[in-house]
Image (cartoon, rainbow, N blue to C red; front, side, top):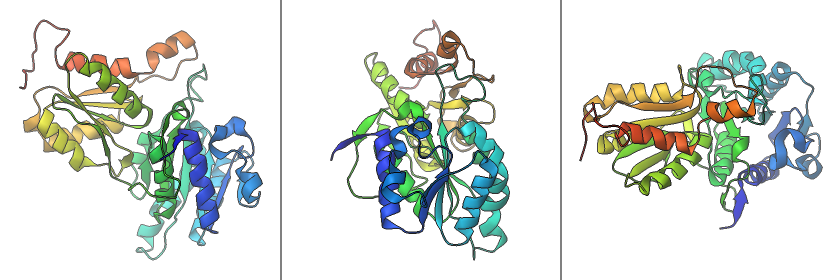
Length: 336
């Protein structure tokens, strides 16, 4: 299997979907410019024509509404929002229209639209260009939400999203674009709603999303050198999410840490921890913990960004605190 970057894996998925299905088209801002979407869509307009790769005006609501309408008419559109922050302007066609269509028409009609939303932060981009808003959509029935963390999943989940038949929010993170990994040449699907067990362990369960899933693997390696055996689960999908795998892991390890690079309050981490507390509380020997962003807007200062955004070291430190490796006593007990 060859190795591709995360961005090139997305680009290959787009190309193969456009080539294999005439119903597929792409619409969004800046699709003819690599400045907006990097190498993830490079020259697709040249390869497939600008009638199928459409560079839209700066009107997120209208562009998304047009894509939803095309989906209702039988097409398989992918609408691209180069910055997730401004997708907020398109919440109406996503939540009020696409998400409800199948339910309102008793399953006889649906809106199979894929909304690709890019998290684009760091580099002193500040509060209006750095937001990860997946929790907004986790709350909404009728929308599926996927967050690939590897090149393999970036390609496979995009294919699965387009073929799913329901509205799917596909969230990728620019901080992953240069990550490399094995990617098959053929078009394939990664099942929506199925998490990936990235590392087996016995001491603590680390559940993570997107960029934080990649950082969790790094953290687990560092913890292993200290004698801590961390199990790492990459959720891949946050709506629906793989509750069964998480519960199985927590019942084995007795400890849970959830890492999601978004605000802590009302987020993915809160949902996972609440579910575990409801369904596997008897297995817990320590209080669950979250590694998330502070409940504050993203700073502009580079020095403040280093504190604001969690990394692998943040995850490792949180696990160490949970296991009382840095404290004289452990108030929550221990598990052999």
